[in-house]
Length: 348
Image 1 (spheres, rainbow, N blue to C red):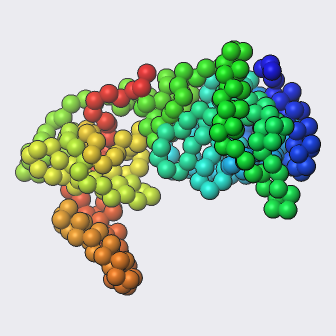
Image 2: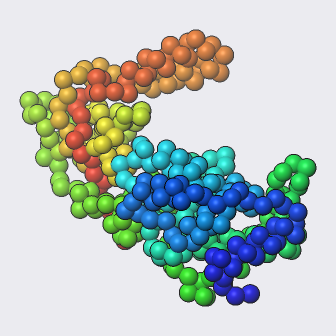
Image 3: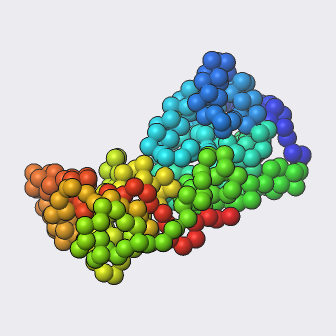
């Protein structure tokens, strides 16, 4: 074996798929679709190997889970996943099925893309293929060795031996490393925590790490609640969290009391709002009422759970509607202008 170019790897894959009786992939992406992808993700850019693949074909069927995508569908998925984020997602999907992804890195070597595996489960993304060529070389090897078999009657690829497939992938990855493939310096990545990303990823996505550095509290919760100050910086631990698409209602504890804070999504560009974490918040006094206590929140959540167990969906729905009233700026002591994580802020 030798380290392949993307064109050589694709040729090997097509030959192996044809010999295995698998159908050929969809035709190439249109230039218009590729230009649309480039414009949408700028200033990030697709690797040359991903462009080469979609210039040859799309959605190759004889590949293991997850199903591979056309360029247009990949862009639709990327846009949907990026729409609610305050920072760009430096990965672009090339395969997706049942909440699982393979995505090409948009930062690093502009010629060869590192391929990452991740899912909608908050677990870190893991490096799957050192290059896109590795994915096609490994698939060609597995088809030729009978590790994969194409089931034409059901139109799907079956992996007959998972361990053998992982061994093929491992061997091809090692070969790529020995051949000088780009090394991103990491093999896992927490997509939910931009402050832990490598510096190159942060710079490419326009993340200003200095904006996340804690600046020190100016008041305790007790002081803020008993004075007429319109604003303050308060440090504490998130001990309650209720989220919505617009933001989160958190309960902050600093040892002197509890503060209910509405955190609009724009105030949390670094995704630091997590239950149990220490944060520093620039707060503005809210004209709303903070009538909803944590005890009431807990009671409503317990009511929903017990009602569902009993099969009383009407009671569960009524409690859920009341609970939804807590997830907004009307039921808090203050609103957040900015949120910063206390302690270490970068994985560099």
